[in-house]
Length: 330
Image (cartoon, rainbow, N blue to C red; front, side, top):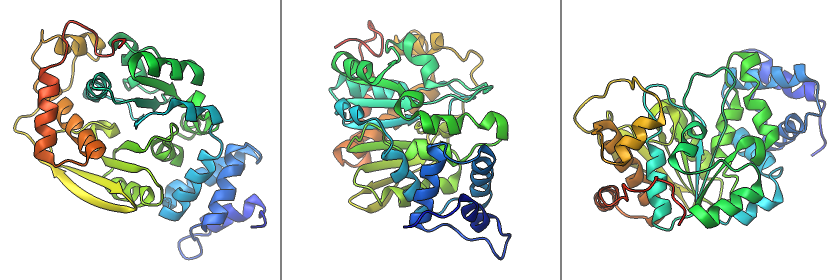
């Protein structure tokens, strides 16, 4: 495809209710590549990203954007050789990131995991990266260090600024825009570790189905659902629709709500998390969230039914080593 002036892409998206249209795959691929490469004027990038937000990206556009992003990933990321990729991008406000315990239990069971995420400037959210060092997992400062952590912990956390700084730069534009852009969606769909299995949490109801349609365009087996606060954590206070995509086809499983209602955490810190892990503090929401999230992850990894997955997850939670940190050297 011959590259068009970037203004043509802005014009296509912004012509108004009757004249605007979505970009073709080739147009979207070219446009996002130029945005990532910072080869256009910053005013053009801002206009492009905000017009996409107003119109909402099509499945074809998102698929093309992801192709452009993945082509710019560092080649040495393939050295991670993990089984499961989990994006941690939303950050928590009401609850703590209990799904990290689900990841820790899988890692202790031998599953190799890549956690990746980013934080937004000025956000008051509690991110996975804030919790992990206290839970026993250092944050990797390079791809080489992430590979080393895999051999020690079976899991690593890689900031998007290391995995794909071009995309991280777009996420951090929220401080200027006052709004999120499609960069947040792309980071969740990215699967930078090239794992055969990927988990994605979204916030808005309609985004789970759209993510599933995008996942159908790629080889990995994926799970996407509307998680607590947008993170990959099953909130058992409501029915959760789990969308499993394998071989280009998606099936839906409903994880039913559990009785009870939880209050907002007063102490958003890892001290509460560690007390729950050690069995020193009862926490209904935490226990339910860990078991439910772990159940969903097991359903993806092992293609088992919900009852079996829930039993397995409950046993793994009950059998955790409360004398060690959740992420302990193996």
